[in-house]
Image 1 (cartoon, rainbow, N blue to C red):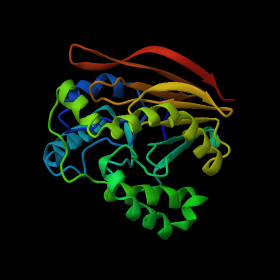
Image 2 (image 1 turned 180 degrees about the vertical axis):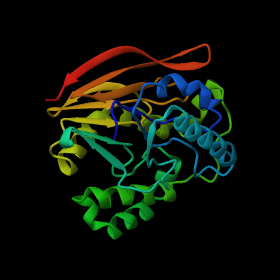
Image 3 (image 1 turned 180 degrees about the horizontal axis):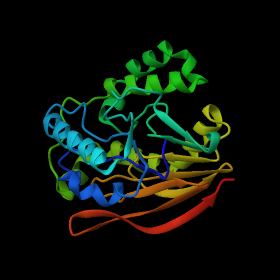
Image 4 (image 1 turned 90 degrees about the vertical axis):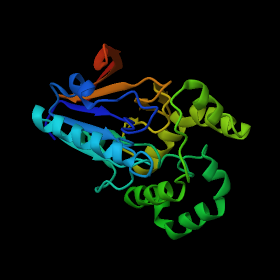
Length: 267
């Protein structure tokens, strides 16, 4: 991959709640990058009602990358499990691991209504993928199958924060599960890295939409958030042994790299 390698996640192209209505708004984020890694949930592959729009936006994104001469790497997420490849990227000889995050927790998206309802089927999937306990490739394949299993019959079409909030708290146990996952995502990500990527010092994820930087179990965990209301998003850059992370700002309908929050040197 050509440097600088830029990492973004959870664009959710085509979803009504995505803040990206036109891929041209992403031009400032792609400019200057040698490679952009889209770390899962780039588009709504599984959402029948949004797929056509999502596919148009995805093709537009690919065309923008080609125009700018950017190498584009798409990793699978729970909303777009169909991407080929391993499902993760390693930088700095494995000291940095980038993966969507739906493999971090046993249930993939444990806050979903479908996870509450399909527990036996989830257990059956794990029984079919016994090697997923120790093998990263098998674990990511299981995550892809889990995403398809947990596909909802319909996705709420409301964009407003009120409608999204009402969806999150119905049933109430869903809201509690969302809060639990936000609270433990960094620790679970560190445990995931220890099991599957023991050389990793930094783990870059998305999936949970709750962005942040944490130090857990001797590892740094970075969640790059999402381009979906009401969540914020971050960018991560890798170049010449330096890893940088900062906020994404939206100005005049365009997304830009804003403040640098942290910098790490990996020699």
